[in-house]
Image (tube, rainbow, N blue to C red; front, side):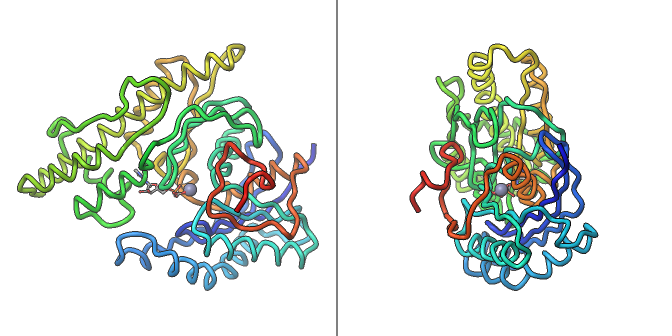
Amino acid sequence: MGDFTVLGLETSCDETAAAVVRGSPPGPGTILSNVVLSQLQEHTPFGGVVPEIAARAHVEALDSIVEAAIAEAAVQPADIDAVAATAGPGLIGGVMVGLTTAKALALAWDKPLIAVNHLEAHALTARLTAGIGFPYLLLLISGGHCQLLAVDGVGQYRLYGSTIDDAVGEAFDKAAKLLDLPYPGGPNIEALAREGNLKAFALPRPMLGREGADFSFSGLKTALRQVVRSSDMNEASRADLAASFQAAVIACLVDRVTAAMNMFRRDFADTVCPMFVVSGGVAANSAIRAALTERAHGRGFAISLPPPALCTDNAAMVAWTGLERLQGGLLDDMSVSPRARWPLYRQAIAETPQ
Ligand code: KG4
Ligand code: ZN
């Protein structure tokens, strides 16, 4: 089968991104360009992403980011087979900007339009980067999501577990606030944790050993708040607390992943060498990567971890997902609408009311 070339746009949170990817499923694909503009500076003073500011920044930046992605890829519109954009879930203002721009480009160039689920884009990244075949067990850990799923094909997802309260990235971001670290919390906690003693504070490990593969992180956050309020924090104890927090998160992730590995083995008993994939922004964390790698190997799973820059939000994963859907004939028409909520395991747009 011939290769496809797809332009992808990503605007669902605080990154304005465009990328051109070439290839064919199952991958790996070639990233011809991958331009990401972070709005970090605009949001940092507010300690989190401000939707209005994000939407305006996407409007201002997107056209030139798209131009840069096309120029860097050295392609002409004629070389592009489809235009894909994140259509949700995410901050609705930003999603509208990206999807509307994609519609305009698809109309102007007379190309198919593909409305991409942002979570599916994270879920399929390991095919773009490593050509991983179906099925695989996926841990999706980002700012808004924390799920364990079996991925059995494009649009074929079976949910094993999800968070009953905060997403793991959200837990990192809230913990960072309590520790007076700037947004986004994940990378800052990871850096501070390197200097601390992970055994210094005994923090809870919610859901450990529970049946199923669900997560919970709000109790951990509450415990952290109590420590911060009740003790005199200094530089060293802040680092200890960051390290202890990260260790508790890792213990929870490893336990829940182990439970999901058992479910995956039960459901896909014929799979000789089962594959475990981790994706989403939190998968950029090197301590988490190391712990999950160790557990995967201990349980006879191969593991695929996309490079950190492709774990956090980017448009290459959106272009790749567009490419997979294009190959499967899963196109959208101009009436497709942006959506703030769009769960992965109920894929079809038609099934999901706004
Ligand atoms: O996937 P992503 O870029 O955006 C969403 O779709 O949510 O994930 C962003 C989340 C943020 O909560 C951020 O704190 C977290 O990923 N994150 C990390 C690290 N890098 C980003 N969490 C822990 N350690 C990191 N190194
Ligand atoms: Zn994301």
